[in-house]
Image (cartoon, rainbow, N blue to C red):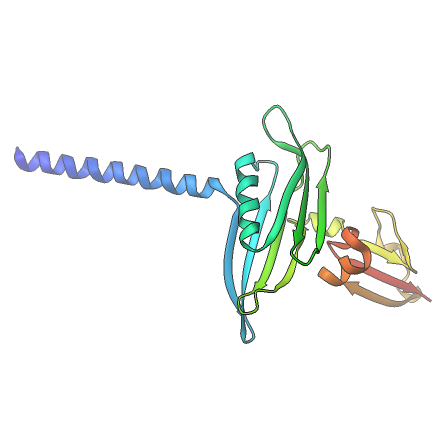
Length: 198
């Protein structure tokens, strides 16, 4: 009888511990979509911060994202926040500013639910200098947001590059990341394809 009681206690304790661990892992996964990691590129180590923002992002998430960015010496703020009756984000404006006054704004306004996007920072662990920073749209949505420029003129969306006869193209220039935003501002955040016709 005593042996049976010990077995029952062990089984109950194991079950309770398993349930607690499951609950803890669920709460960890649901808390925040912000993570940092280190990566070696060449002879240098870099620290990366990536913050995912989607229509389910809560006020607490936004507050923790601001704190995470602050650790990387970046001021991140969120304004124009609107939610529907279920609490889903329908509008948001995100702005970052670095200590050297580099800034960018990303805005999603008056949507049924905002498109998912993320904020990222790549910092040199040695020099503590920010190498890359910005906002990006997640998933395949980014391909729809590529800016096309034909003969120096921005082309309205949607643009079907297949409408141009390849024989008429003299040159194609692809700009990504900082080179795109330096030349075209936030309109070029998801890349720019410059096409020069003959």
